[in-house]
Image (cartoon, rainbow, N blue to C red; front, side):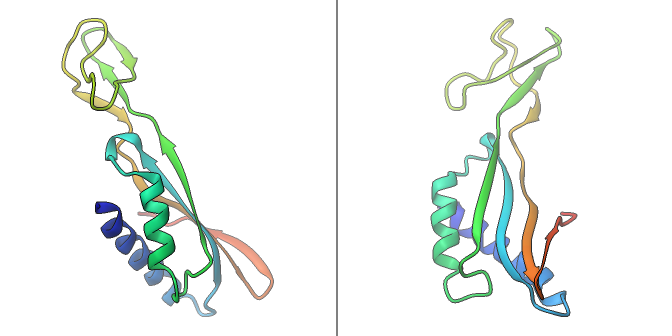
Length: 127
């Protein structure tokens, strides 16, 4: 279950930012973008986040996951297509192997929502 390791890395990244803040903000939500081709199970990631944040600065924060579809581009046909993960990766028209992935490999922190001294804000890391 690589979701556990991914969650640890997520917590370390957010904690580093959090520790740099003069007033330690209360984080309410962490927004992630996760591509379908990363093979990350959102339910497992949610569970790992809930378990690993208990008793930490992120306790009570919500993990919001936005999934992006797998989209490939066939240079031979000059068209985008949606491969079926685990079933069919080749271009459905000419059967060329999938070479150019346009979407689906993302795994990044999109933004962190937090409040500090009655002020709500967002932090979008440059990761």
